Every structure is written in C-alpha cells, then in structure tokens.
Length: 204
Image (cartoon, rainbow, N blue to C red; front, side, top):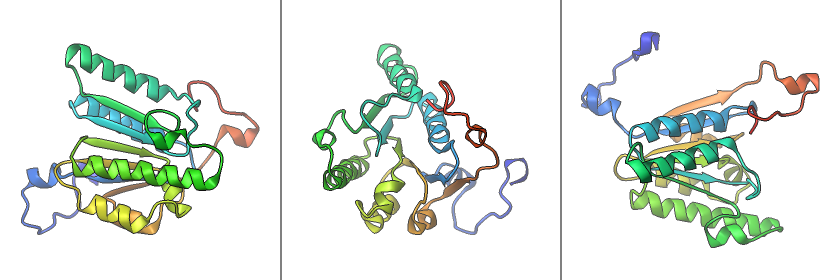
C-alpha cells in the first residue's frame, strides 16, 4: 500500500467513499505482545470520532487492572460530562453480568464465555455500539467454548456500521479468512529474553 493507496481497485460497483467507509472485522493475533494495545489504540481513535465503544475482555481476572481500562472509562466520563467523544462501556470477568460471577471450574469458564458471546451477539444485532473490542476472544474459540462458525456468521451478517476488533493468539483460520484486516504480531526481540519481567506502563 504505497502512500496509503490500494494496489488494486476492485470492480465491486461501490464508490470510493462507500468502500472506504465499510465496517471492518479486525484481528490482532500472533505470539508477541501488542495485540490488545493496538486494539485499544483503535478504540481511542473511535472514541475521538464520537463512536460508541464496547470493550469485552475474556479470560482476564476481574482483579486485573489495565491502564487502558482506566483511560477509556475516564474518556467515557468525559463524554457524559461534556459531550466530547463517544460513550464507553467496559466489561470483563467479575464485573457486570451474571456470567462473570462464576468461578473456578473449566465448565464454569466455558459457560461464562458462551454467555458473554451471547450478550455481544445481542448487542451486534441491536447495533448497540460502533466499535467492539473483543479482547482475548481467540482463546474461547480455540478451546471450543464458543462456536467459531457461529461467530463468523454473526460478524458476516451484522447490520449497520459496526467495527469489530478481536485479539488473542492462535486465531482460528475461519476467523482469519472472514476478517478484513489481520495483523500477526511476530517476536523479533523482547526484554524477557534477557530475564526482565513485565514493567509498569509497558505491560499494564
């Protein structure tokens, strides 16, 4: 894409404006750090456009606090108080829905993931948000807790103008095939290679 221009213009009957403004499914996968960070960067851009942002974290503990959560929730308050940007919702295990209060057993986590996805699917059908960040969502798909074909179908048939960003390692091939933009984070070098643990402001 030299200078941000596509190499090929498809003969799809759409205008440049229509093609440029179509809703996207974005997947950030691979073994290296930065998948969620990039997704939350997109959420910040969406907030600046006045979009409704919905963040849904899978596999994360309710006690685990990440800087992006504090920042985006604060921006949600800015919207409520001033009208600037867009509304923000942030949901994860341990906060909000009944599924998040189950604990311990793998079957409980699987049920939680399915119930979480069912709620997201309802919101997509209702066009509740402009951008969804499904953080670490590839893991419930990989483990078979949530049906990949069901997810792909819901994303493919979603109404309106809703962007969906999905993060996590080992994204299923069916999801990769269905996505419009896929980035695979590949490690070249990492501080942990030299025995350095994660640090404040970089990992959280």
